[in-house]
Length: 147
Image (cartoon, rainbow, N blue to C red; front, side, top):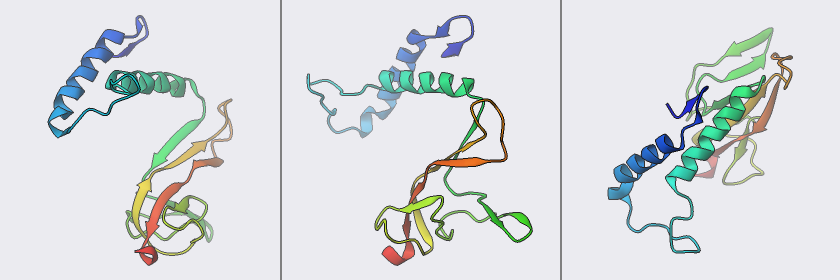
């Protein structure tokens, strides 16, 4: 366990995990990306440590954060909410939750590729208002019309 209530963040476990990842990925790497001192600019150990620290901070939040690539999108309309079961590609472009990665001015079309996910926050820091959402980062998409 990388994070435990008694010990906190286990740096030794992070180092072992990072080494294991580097060994697994090394056959796919041509040449190590060099930083200013000739070493890796960012190591897997740094990446895992940052991810664990972010997880600790997110676990303390009372709001709920949702990351979505496109499956099970919710669309408001008619007499309430209707749940769309379609998966991307094939979603209709939605300017509230999407931004066209090719042409930021385009606000119509059918999504053919999702480049980055949607990040939404439900509720507030006090753990209230879970019926309201705030889009923190819109999906970056490519639409059929841009291909």
